[in-house]
Amino acid sequence: MAQRVRRWVAVVAATGAALGFAVPGAHAAERSSDGDTYCDVVYGRAPAPEADSPLLFRTCAGSEAESKARVMAWFGRQRAAGLAPGDPVTMMYWYEHINYNRDARGDMTRIWGNDGPCDSAGYRVEPNSEWAGKLSSILGDSGCTEMTIYNRALTHRREGWSIRYQSPVGMYLHEFNDNVGRIQAHA
Picture 1 (cartoon, rainbow, N blue to C red):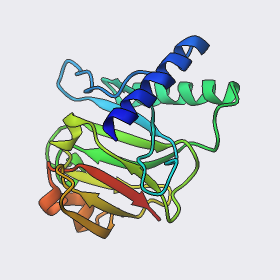
Picture 2: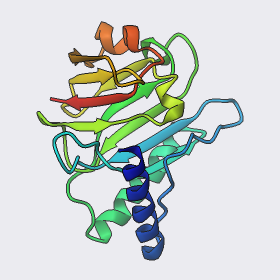
Picture 3: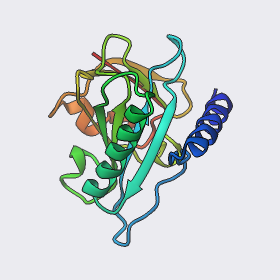
Picture 4: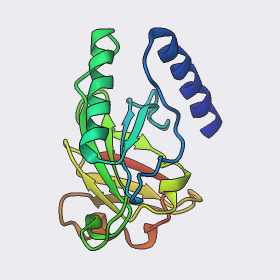
């Protein structure tokens, strides 16, 4: 599956380059000078019920505002080219530390859906290798109020966990803290 996703990302990147769009790959985030990184990652709808949502775009910056400005510019180019299937929505926020990074400074990534808000199918994403080993809090948004979460080995999962604000599961991730292999965020 990972090889198929990488191949798909390469095709999207080549298409984006041909159209003059920036489509970075799914690599570890660049670091800002103080060690904090803010990223925005965009996923499309999964092509089939058990398939992962395709990674469409990723950008990182030293400030949250700069990263968001880059992703909004990308959405604008997609709309102008007629490639945006729906309205972009934030579906999750990922935090490096428990309690949404409130107790310690750390990385944050905003996860976007390119095809409207969460429904019962939602979006199914696999964190890159960096996030798989450091994801400690998840906050849902735009109707993504629950998740099925898997460990890195994909041998253990929990279904129906709330990722609403202040949910003890989303704030701490329990046995999945720094051990996330897949997240299916849904309504």
